[in-house]
Length: 292
Ligand code: ASP
Image (cartoon, rainbow, N blue to C red; front, side, top):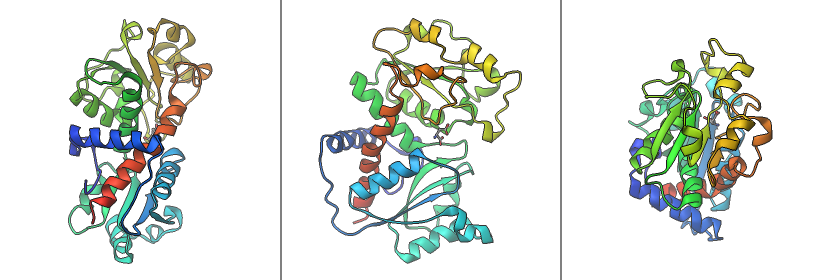
């Protein structure tokens, strides 16, 4: 892969190769990069997991991570994203990992930029590396995607994780259902009640209420949202044997999920984070090797 921009731009075969390589890394494989590659992580929006996870992955495969602090960069002097990325390319970066509040920010970079771009989240657009680590987590659990019932619950309209996962999981043969208030279903069909989704789902994936994106939380308080759409203790009891709970985090405890369920037996929330490092090692390695 030259870039990783969205899940539409990745084939099922490429996904399969990334998941396979991630499993090798998890089993202890070492990366053998042929030269010293330089990578910078440009996070123009807050991040705990994704930034640290990419940095850890880059170091583990032997790439050199060049520090970049968006809050202290020339962006504050009005420099455009294109000029910032072109500057890093001129300094010698091989790849940049970018998170930006603008949907599809990468479109303005595709012409004129040669450095590889890894999208670490574009506004309410996509979050492909999160999707890949979610796929890895699901595949490790069930050994397949075909025929799995996956329910995504929450603010789909503002969730780049949901958008990437809906595209990828449906293309891989999973049955994806959505449950959320009408104002958050975006262009997707959705249930407005849990109906029988608790009893039939293999995976329940919860989404964070995106308060910072002016999520229209109309008509709901944290409590009333939790009662109507959250994963409460009572709802968890109705889930079928072997079904798992996922959440990309950060979690609003007591809103989309009861706090006591965050680390319950079914929860894979911290497993997802652990898996993310192996998956990002595979993604960055794939992209850097493609530059030889
Ligand atoms: N960390 C994920 C993201 O950046 C999920 C979230 O923030 O809700 O999209």
